[in-house]
Image 1: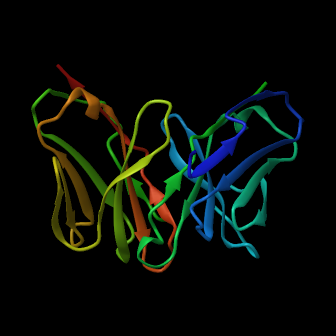
Image 2: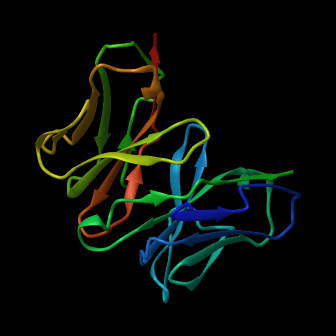
Length: 114
Length: 111
């Protein structure tokens, strides 16, 4: 089983719909992240969480919200999806101490908003 | 605004050659530097990390860091077609634990 699991892997939805992308991890890491990847734009940080009670905005948080339900679960929501949110979304985790800034990524969730 | 710059490529090299991938960064207090490899349709995976000036070697991969010039590079020796992927440079400023990613360089190794 994957260390970082994202669901769904693929989703097609319509403008205005609410969408939730879920992430769970078995690595025991405290830190979790949501990134968005668009062709030619690299990875951009949406939100991150360093523990269950900690939520922080990244560089492109507008139009998104997150929930850290437990140490192992971090979900990303699009309250009212729009076409320019079509992208590949990655969840990532990292530990503390020496490995604090090394990210382990999930397989990705490809979202298409029509 | 912290910036990490990479040439988008594609960089095309013949099998067996040395591939040289470059990355510059804007934040002088950056402490940690990473190279991730991403195959098409897959997630990024860490291949190298480097924290101090100089070279760090791991098998066919060598990471080079020059903090004075704000420059980090990745050399791939004896390039193989299986090395064909996008290589993402990531830079983390001291204490933030949040890496900033470059846009990636596409590498094509042709037989």
